Image (tube, rainbow over all chains, first blue to last red; front, side):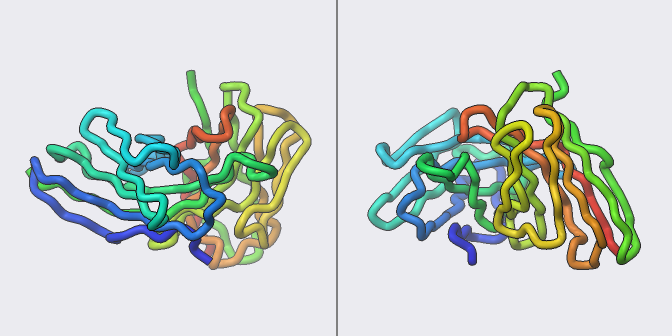
Amino acid sequence: QQQVKQSPQSLIVQKGGIPIINCAYENTAFDYFPWYQQFPGKGPALLIAIRPDVSEKKEGRFTISFNKSAKQFSLHIMDSQPGDSATYFCAASSAGGTSYGKLTFGQGTILTVHP
Amino acid sequence: NAGVTQTPKFRVLKTGQSMTLLCAQDMNHEYMYWYRQDPGMGLRLIHYSVGEGTTAKGEVPDGYNVSRLKKQNFLLGLESAAPSQTSVYFCASSYSLNIQYFGAGTRLSVL
């Protein structure tokens, strides 16, 4: 049972384009939504994260948009560069009770940015 | 500062063989996690630990066992490997219940 659904599965853009990756969740107890970036042969690394008390968070060229009522959030990469080519995972977790920071991941999006 | 180190990096097993994957972290983190990554499935939690001497089941625990005898180490065992366990395994550790730090992974093939 996939509680976090991510789309698209793969995405190809030209340098300077703005790729958008979307995620939808079901569990209303989720209150922390990170994005992880993974390069080939490496482990995932935290890129940016948001909590549901804000609708948008920006760090450099990366922006998360969050829609609590729709239970959706998305990652936008401004002025994308070939070095951004990687697999991106959205995730969700809840802070309360016995969750212990366990993350539920989306299926992943393979992003390719052409020069 | 090594962070999270996983050994081995690659392994090929025959069906029915056993093996142990080692995860070591030098950040004094309380929480540690084992995930498996399969194409189109994202990362799925196998087992996790909230401190030395504790372990708990994640989303896909069947066929795996874990131990955390020392705070810095989290071991993942396969008692009788099956082809369905062919995957890339990632270990992660955390101190804040939010930010998880991942190792580089172990690529396992079961023939």
